[in-house]
Length: 415
Ligand SMILES: C[S@@+](CC[C@H](N)C(=O)[O-])C[C@H]1O[C@@H](n2cnc3c(N)ncnc32)[C@H](O)[C@@H]1O
Image (cartoon, rainbow, N blue to C red; front, side):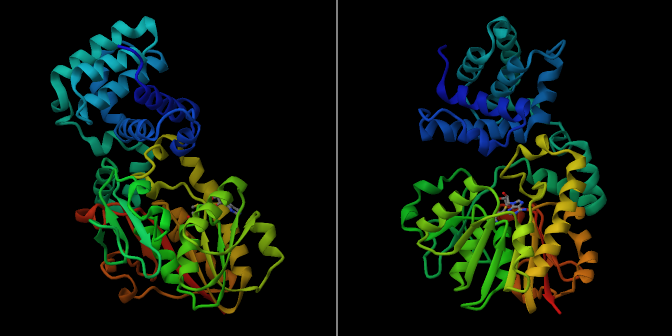
């Protein structure tokens, strides 16, 4: 069977993540330009299935392998197994394409193993503890310590692809067929491509998980207020704040990401001041200069595994403390930007308490007073309020509607 462009792109994506530790979006951007959007999307779907269910896939393959084959042969096997077990590809196509991907000396092995997997089919997954197998042990332990038995529901939520969530520009209607969630997000089924939704170019909506829309809602600046949106790209929260009528300064340190933010604002026909800078030195020169500050700090992103299934394969336990220290420094810089009486919302898309709840204790020493979130501000999410009045969302919340990303969000006022 000749090499199929979708499968060779999927092979490039899986290899980039598992062997060269690249983020999946970065690997997608690095695919050759000649690969058609349709092939890219299909390759993304295959690679995401491999990464999301890697532990389960390897558990099915393992009994057929006397020793671990070379990485390229292993990735071909994983892609073939994902197609057979999870994606409903006809067996002859799944096996033939995987054999074509494998290095020549391993073609016979890949063929023999996948034929055996094909004989069993998706039933091979029955009886496996997918939640455990597909979660690295350090994450399971950390979530068990933080959330008790809910760790299983969190891990199970990660085995399914996330729906497409849209935030709507002021006055824009939800696209046809979307479910309107209690927080105002318009939700479409997983696999929907945003660029193919009628009206995309007109700028009535942008992609943003339901939970990711909460920090800007809770900041709720008044029209004309000066707002600093720190760590801003690709700009989902910037767009919300501009939509509320605030005068927004969006600060982002990566020039390429700032460009993406500018492109997104241009499509939405929105305006903000976009600054390419590191928040730390930038904030030091603008003390007291803003009415409100939104800090969406860089984090391990373990709350976004449904959308970024490579995260468990790239993050290590040591990253948590390192990023928590960065977040603490950024929180101090952000607090300094506030005029007296100003409001600050701090958010991370992590499920690790070190990157969320642990920051509350330090905030008081920065002159920040907690301003608890009220239940009526977050309809349908009362269960996500913490005793301190912060918000802790998890991927298993709103599970019957398709879940949401895991975020920690806290609000403060400057004395
Ligand atoms: C979680 S993402 C932000 C998502 C964004 N707020 C949104 O809603 O679309 C974090 C961003 O912070 C940027 N960043 C990380 N450290 C920074 C720093 N010290 N100064 C400015 N930007 C930073 C990263 O490049 C990344 O784009």
